[in-house]
Amino acid sequence: MLEARNLPPIFAAWSTAHGIAYLALEDKMHFALQGNYDEDFRKRLLPEILKAQWA
Image (cartoon, rainbow, N blue to C red; front, side):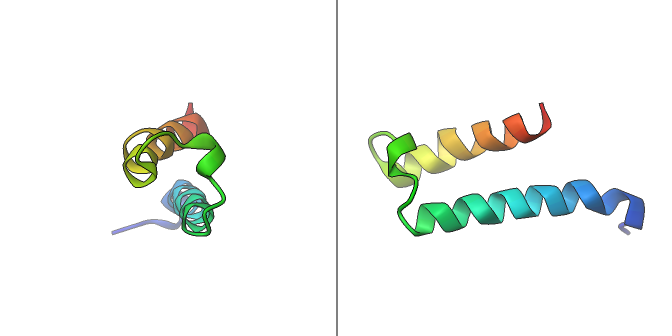
């Protein structure tokens, strides 16, 4: 079961992923993507962004 003290990182991850996904869906991330935009977003850009969030 989740405890209240463990929720901040979960909400931070959810908010980050949700915001990035929204930008991607609105085609506002093409400047950062290469080749196949969907694949590049999933395999490269999103993991890099999430890693930077907690590095």
